[in-house]
Length: 611
Ligand SMILES: Nc1ncnc2c1ncn2[C@@H]1O[C@H](COP(=O)(O)OP(=O)(O)OP(=O)(O)O)[C@@H](O)[C@H]1O
Ligand SMILES: [Mg+2]
Ligand SMILES: [Zn+2]
Image 1 (cartoon, rainbow, N blue to C red):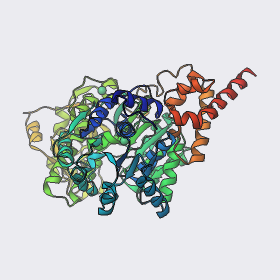
Image 2: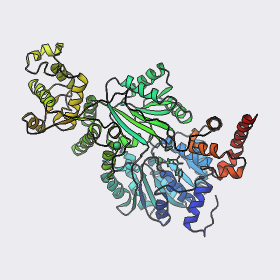
Image 3: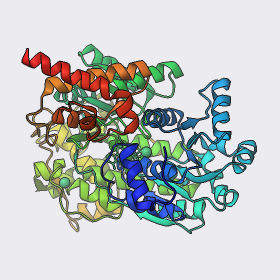
Image 4: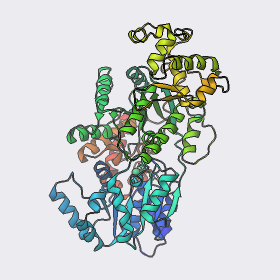
């Protein structure tokens, strides 16, 4: 990569964007971040998932020359990035624990010889005295810290190895540092700025909205069925399904497989080889469903993920946002769907309490959970709540279940009072299932053993469906009328607000859950802009070529070309290399390496059509 030193920064970064990465325009925020870095400032870039944070340091790295150090928390992520950069003709290297010694030594030789532009390292490896000493002797011109929220103790993804990174600004006093993250509420943001930069940093915060992701939540009833229905509606598309436990990922994957869905599991308890094989299959093929714990996904950049499905409540709204951000990165319509039940709240509270963290930390974690529950139970536009949490205001989005279904609301004072009475009469220590049994007049063993069939409340709820009573209980908890005893067994107790309601001093309106997994209004999933009238046979042929190349090179398919690039290719039908170079996403190196191959496929397809 040669860039004339005298060229103004504006031109040189544009030229790198086009020549190396094949893109015509910067995305929102990218140019501003790059300019600040090129002017020698530290930058904290808070940009949504999939916004294109990587280019924010990759382009300046090439404009600046010398060596750029990139800190990244996961080995798999580093490997993908390095593979993608190399295909674009960029001298990138990584030194990490998954490579054998010889490979690491060879990589270091290239770095020391000044051949490497970007070096990817895990924080713990970078911060060893030996590595730091060696690096300070080299021509380091930029440092990038990806997934920077990992440094914040208050954040949900704290990693101890990240704390050490606060020493970097002292060790490399003249080198601009960029910290990048997709999830940072105000507290975390300030924390990152303080720790990494001592407050002296240009902060660029971009809108958080991912408007193409439809947001929806449904009460958890029979999660396997609900998942299967959902997955079948998106047959042939790739999706990620998050489960709370390792065991569940495997059970659910087996269940989907039995029902004819291509499904794989991913969790930290699997062997490294099995994990990598599944990750590679997911990244390379299309139409695979990945059942995963949160061990899977940070930095996953597979553009055609059509949905993220949560079978269980995530840890916080930040975590939720980060997780659903893996859907729809190609800009096409995508869905984020969650199942939500009272048991989830209990489980999450137990997690927090069992964590052994300081009291202040627990208090914050419970607070974050309350916010998430509020999001689940809201009758308002979900996107408004989500964006509001990140400090953005928005109008109703028209692409969440609450906007689309306009769930009707009803006056629930009477229903609430019979529920509150049943809870009070049973001693405020039983969980939802037992309270509902009492309300419905079920003479279960537990009811009889406790003499609860003698209570005045016994059978007072028979006019209602069990699902309605459970929904009311959830909404009463979410509304602060009831509390859920987290330390014990999920016992429900009446909160002060609930006593006011029982005395008629407060009122309660509830959302009528008419939404049914199988009947809900379903928007067409594929409303990809500009794909109408596209030659789908040609596109399929191009995808086949991509898959073959990806397999040969053992990289994920999107690293060769994104879907969007293939669509652009199929539309333009280039006949020669000049025309091929104009395709969005085709840079100089890929033009050289792949141009003829794809041109051949296009020509073969067209002669097949005419003949
Ligand atoms: N200017 C651009 N024009 C076209 N495509 C771009 C541009 N910038 C980035 N992209 C593409 O956008 C996709 C997402 O980029 P990237 O992986 O950097 O996202 P990210 O912001 O790091 O997200 P995450 O927070 O999930 O890691 C990539 O496939 C990348 O090639
Ligand atoms: Mg990223
Ligand atoms: Zn909405």
